[in-house]
Length: 231
Image 1: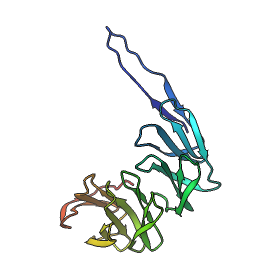
Image 2: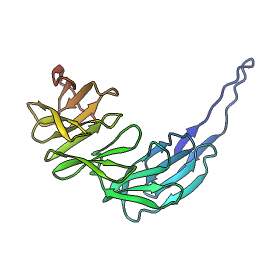
Image 3: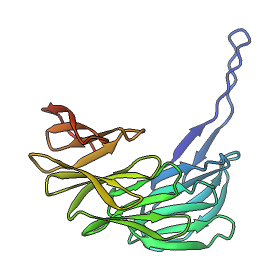
Image 4: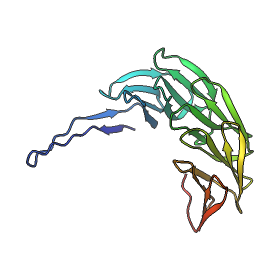
């Protein structure tokens, strides 16, 4: 699979249109890519491993080997100095300058991973809980006790998280303390959870129903039936 990135400028001189050349990035089967906050690099992960590219030229700069790891998500740290390669059985935080792994963290479970906007906080689903990791220090923060988690999400700041489980509950968490803020009960098992960008609202989804909640009060705002959730 190839990723096609088009850098385009338009000059209106009569009907004339000028476009810059396209840049094609491709190594194996692509799963995810990210642009560094510094706007200097692109990182991609897939069947071929983790790759670092120049955003300006589109040229490959470095390959980070992963052996037989299955990779499915990639992100940069907020300072653009680290690449976070998320996979199974492990998650690796790479130092771009030394080209060496700084930290080896537990792997996620399929799509059950969520990153803060800065890339400095990571929440991973584990068998009996969800774990919050600092990708800058490699230290484990909060552990959110919620068995058989089906979905997780984290707000952009990395301070609020949500887990939904087979127990039909959605739990809103304060990730700085690891304490539950609200437990939201549902009539059937949940498969989906998503926080709004400002974390003021939460959407939870079952097989054919969707609920919208106020995260500060835990009050239900809306209930939609005969819907189809999409993960």
